Image (cartoon, rainbow, N blue to C red):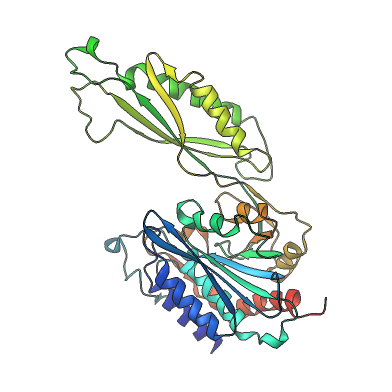
Length: 383
C-alpha cells in the first residue's frame, strides 16, 4: 500500500504543469493541503516573479522550533515538447519497469517519497521536528530558495536535497555564474564601412581571445575531488540580434558564457576578474564593451565528509560520499547555516530530456524505508 501511495503522489504531482515560467500556486496549494491534512504545520512563502505568482512551501511536523532534519526539493520543472515524448509528459506512465513523466527524477518522484515518509510517521513519535522544504524556480537560478532563506535563521539543521544522484550522497559541487558580454558599435550599410563601427570585426576577436586567456588560467586551479578538477569557462552563444543582415554593419554582438567555480573560489571575485580582464576601460577598438551578470550566481557547495548526516546516508545506501558536476540549492542553503547533503532518486542522466524516467526500484518500500529510518534516527530518538 505504501508503494501505491508513493506512486499515486508522484502521479498527482506530475499532473501539475509546473514549468518554471508558469505559476507554482496550483502545485504548492495541492501539496500544502495534503501535508496539512497529514498533521504538518504548513507555511507558504509567496513571491512575485515578473508578474507570475510563485510559492515556496515549508511544512514541519512534531515539536517546536527548527527541524532537526528536513527533506528538500523543487516544485518546478524544465520545459517539454510533447511531440518528442512517447507518452504524455504530464502523466505518470509505466513501461518495462520504468516510470516516465516530466519530473519523475527531477524531482517530483523524490518529493512524493519525502511526503510519504513524513506522512506515515505519527506526530507523537517525533521528539524533534521533521521538515519538508519545497521551492519554486530552482531551474531558473534557484530564485525561490534565495527568497526563502534571505534574512532568516537556518531553516533546518540538516537537509537532504533529493536531486537525482542514484542514492549516492554528494557533498561537493561547483558554483554557477551566467554572464553576458555586450558589444555596441554603429550600424551602417556594408558598402560604406567607414560610416559604421562593426562590433563583430572590431571587438569580438579580442573578447574571445581574452576569455580564452581566462579559461586557460582557470585550468591551472585544481581540486582533484572533481572529475573535471578545475573551474570551467564556456562560451555557448554568440549572436548579432534578430535584425542582423549580411549586408549591414553589425552594430551589436552578444556573447553568453558560463563559469563553474570551485568551492575554494569567491564568486564575486571571479566576476570582477572577468570584467577587468575582458574590458578594463569599457572600450575595445572603438566598440563599447560591457560584461553583465545575467542573474545572481549560485555559490559552490561543500559539506564536511565527517558530518553526521553524511555518514548515516553512506551507511544507509552503501555508497561513498562524492562530488557532482551539476548545480543544486545546496550552496545557498549551506550558506544560510544548514548542513546539506544531495541524495535522491534516479539518475541525472535522465533529467531535462524527453521521456524522463525513474527505474521502478527507486519507488520500492526498501528505499522508502531507508529514508524513514534516517528521519526516525534524527527526529524520533532521544537527544
